Length: 155
Image (cartoon, rainbow, N blue to C red; front, side, top):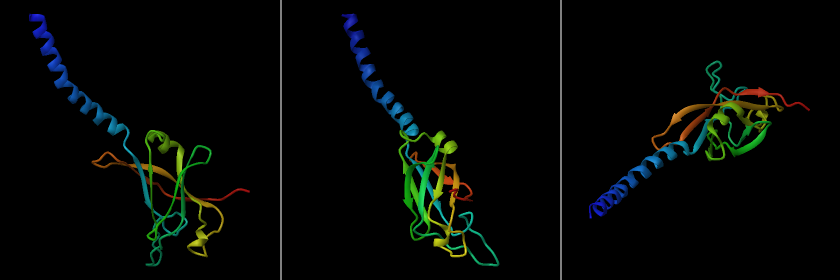
């Protein structure tokens, strides 16, 4: 009789503890498996950033092709800047490990700079490393581009 009461108490305790353990595990996994967002605004300049020269501001670079390239130039994701020069890529953390993105990947702008300003080079690509900004309250990992550099294309 005593063993059946003990067994019943054990089962009840296990049923009460299970949702707590699942909730804790879910919280851990959601932190590890949060989407990764890469956001930026591209300007029409040799470094893709705002250049203020003689009081003039740099125009944005709309409709530019932006790629996330990793390793030996493999295109992982791509998008086009909007009318305000902004772009956003959202990546699956299961397929893209954050540490690998930060150490092995770059944002590459393949649209020639001469498209937005005829006095800028028509060959080469803008390329920038990724930097982590932080996480949103929802767990989304936010990355931004570092400083762009013009990389000449070799034939």
